[in-house]
Length: 396
Image (cartoon, rainbow, N blue to C red):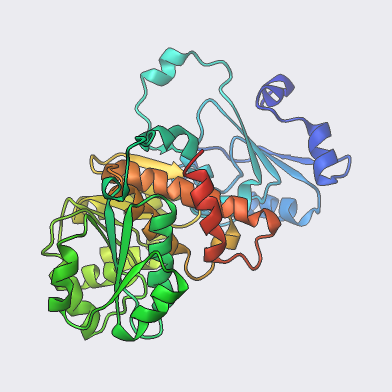
């Protein structure tokens, strides 16, 4: 059992926590099972966890909520639902993704004064990333800079009925700082997109050949928002794959890739768990059972960078590195959020960031923008609510 001093070192104070949570004078301290759990919880342990969860008392988990897998964040059958978790020595990656957010409550950490040299000698399985730590990748703009210095993003998408997806991706690329943004979409949508957001150069495209004049100017492609999987999308996608510039693939572009697998080193793939399952020919449940392994396998199989979206978004980099962003909130579970992320990453690529840096910074910037926008409430949060925050955060 952790000492009271260790809890205080982690920043946890039972008194202040009760005051904040409105908790009673009693609480349950969960230390039933530790970080080595590798099989479903059953028998007396499952019964004990059921009693804890039914008690109505606040619960403090020590190191990890009992029943949660420390490596994957998978619920191993019965799991303690904690109001707070105090963890020690090393942050367990399973606390930050998968099912974990539903069980951990607020997380506190203490290194218990482990010497820095010990940490330096251990290669982490994954690294937690934040926007602040990555902002130096953008650098300061030259006083003589102009739009030609900051790249030209071409967004390709917007099948009939899905114009908004392409428009949001384009605006996000512009808001994060791309110099120029064009949108290739259905002809019936082009004028409406230009009217809704005049900074976007919107072009009607009906055949693969219609892309040729646009591809000559594009330095980055953002493919998939509102794309569909019909003949129109298939034809455009095949033509785009011939153009060797950095690209971000999202939504149905990812689904088209899954149907006809190809490995390239110049793209960022941004699947949600369902799309990831198609890429690996498995189930969504299989992806969520070990998100870390899934992200690494997608990257190894398809190349480039994989951004596996969801609670605790993962980035599997070009060299096999894993990064985790634990910002973001449930309010971001609404239509268009992925389209905005696609635009943000594409806009960062346009400004010269590497695939790894653009993916990591883009994920963090997008998640933090979502958190800022959610300060007025998570329910009813729209993807377009992130736009002013994206601009502000890209300049802090």
